[in-house]
Each structure stands twice: as C-alpha cells, then as structure tokens.
Image 1 (tube, rainbow, N blue to C red):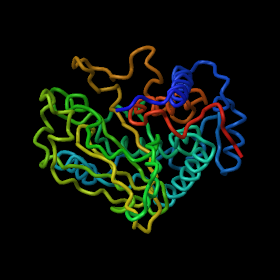
Image 2: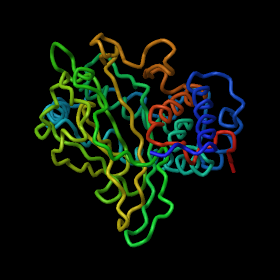
Image 3: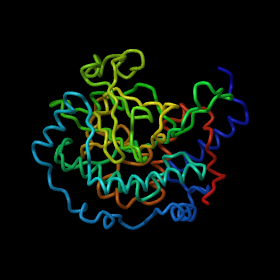
Length: 362
C-alpha cells in the first residue's frame, strides 16, 4: 500500500510512545495520567475511581462463594466440552444490569473525552463487573477449585452504526480502537488453555455486552464456530491452527445475550465479533471481555512450559488476582488499558481518533 503521510506517522509515533509509558507504569505528563482528570470525568458520569478497596460495594455478593449445584456446574462443563461455549447469567439480573448501565456510561464518557473505549477500565464499576464474572467461575469450578485470576488481556468495544448501503462513505471510515474485530481468530492455542495430561480447560474468554439492548444478531453479537465444525480445534501443532481466516470456514453460531449475561468460550475456539447492520433498530453493541485463568496460572507459552505467556518480568501489567481486582491503583488500570490498544495497534494504522495529550473531561 501507499506509505503513511508524515503527519499521520508522527501522530501514531507520539501515541505509541505515550501508551508505552502507561503500559510500563512510568511517570507521564499526559492528562490521562492525572487523577484529577479522572475524578472530573467520573463525577460527570456518576461513576467512581477509588484508591480504597471495592469489596464493600459488593454487599452480600462478597460472601456468596458457595459452589453451584452439581447439575448446574456439570451442564456448563458439558457445554464447553461439546460446543466450546456457553451463555449464562453470572449474577442477579438487577445487579448485573445496574453495573452494565454504569459501564456503558463510562464507555460513552471516555470516548467523548477522546480516548479509546477500553479506558473504561479506569472506573471502579468495570472492575466490579469483572469481579462478578470471576466469582461465578469460582463458584462453578469449571476452572478447578484452586482459584481464578484474570490474564492481562482485557478489552472493550463500542461499535459505530454504519451508513445505509445507498449512502456514499467518502472518505472511507477509518478503523479505530474499540471498533468491531470481525476477523475469525483464536485467543489462544489449544495447548495454551488445556491441561496437557487431562485436557481439562484451564482458561476461559468471558464477554459481556453492556448496552441496554445487549448483543443481538443485528447489532454485533459474538459469533463462535462450535467444536464439531472446526477440524483444527484440537490440532495445536498444525501450521494453520492459528491462521483460521481461510482454513476454518464452519458456520458460526450467533451468541445473542441481554445486557449483563456472559458469553463464555474456550480461548482456542474460533470466534469473531459480528458487524453492526445499518438497518438494525437496536443501539450499537458495547462490550467488555477478559480471559480468566485457573490459578496458579495454567496457560502455556510457546515452548509448552507452565506459566502465562504474558507473565514475564517487564512485560507490562501482571495477571489480576481476586485480592488485587478490588483495589487496583490508577497506574495499573491505565497499564491494562494501554496494553489493549498496543496489542492491536497494527489493526488501526495511524491510531486515528486518539490524542492522549489533548483530552477533554467536561
């Protein structure tokens, strides 16, 4: 393709340098690292950014660690083994809906301020929503009974409504961080999310729509290719195992879900985000996702050695434990948000729509 214009290349370089500063939790002069910036943004959206433990915000949920009934846990495990995914309520519907509404306000607030949607990770309410998912996984014991933690691979999307097909889109709409990711892919290889001796699942991708209408077929629901339509699901050593775009063309299932209901899948399952259709009446989908690991971490790196691939020293934010989740400092929250943008920056040439040094909090 044509080389990037010099001004655009300079812009992208400046954003990448600032994102790396946040990623490594180094001192930054950017407004995005200023606690006062976030205090103003949170107050305007009716949210919070607390340095104190959030445990008290969960009320009785803090004590609700009783295992699920055997039949419920067995059913969930069977769905992962047979299809590779499930859609399930992870908390009281009212609690989940309230948190989703708060996270949706946060996504709107950060994007209005000039940031990618994933910076909603700064707000307490996002971590409370993730905490509900972690507690459910502990209770279901689908990842074993030694505890659960979150891999530093958290992301957020806020789709945009496309123009009708009969309206010209010139210039073409630029892809921005937070737009849909419609490419078929796996989050991890089979051997990175299954025990090598028992084949038990050791990690799960969890995805929650937070917009009022939830995820529908027309507004961007997740698509997953079930195990029985994926000839390479178990073939971690196959050269095309991770190059799924042309090799795994099985018909996907559409994971429709109301706001707050969790879509979960084995990370080696082929999946992709659905596009927003122009004629859809629902608002565009907004969602938050994270990868949850059995603790101690049971992911496998490229050499098949036990240990999370991202857990190496100096590799950015570490996995988030249950204890850490409810008391993360601002710099660690920013590090997780920066990592999400950096990890997928090659999909957004020039990083359009981001200027970390020119933000608005009102």
